[in-house]
Image (tube, rainbow, N blue to C red; front, side):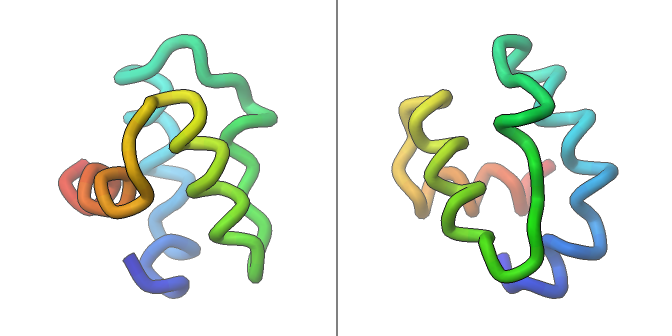
Length: 61
């Protein structure tokens, strides 16, 4: 997922992500421009998925 895709749709995706993984907090889902890798890392830790799996999962939401 490129940076523009993530930035533009993050607010919509965030709700879907929280539905799928109820244990994620708002702090886990903070998106900051230029820090996409940190977000992916937090999602990896919480979901147990690889970075590629996280990116593919987000694209599919």
